Image (cartoon, rainbow, N blue to C red; front, side, top):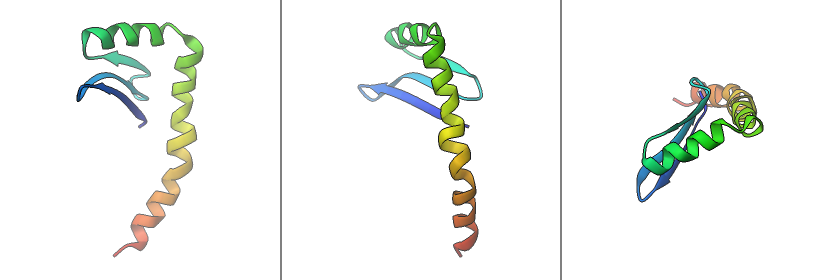
Length: 70
């Protein structure tokens, strides 16, 4: 799962989760940002692609590293 969170003053404003597939806002301002980002199809698809670009390319490397540590 890929998660990207945005914080302001140590409070989580927004979060994108690849399992949900969209942005969720947690503050008044975060809800506005999330609505704007969710209405932008190119930005939303770029965030969905981050799971493959970041997570799936590195999972085998991380898994092998964990197995070799004792």
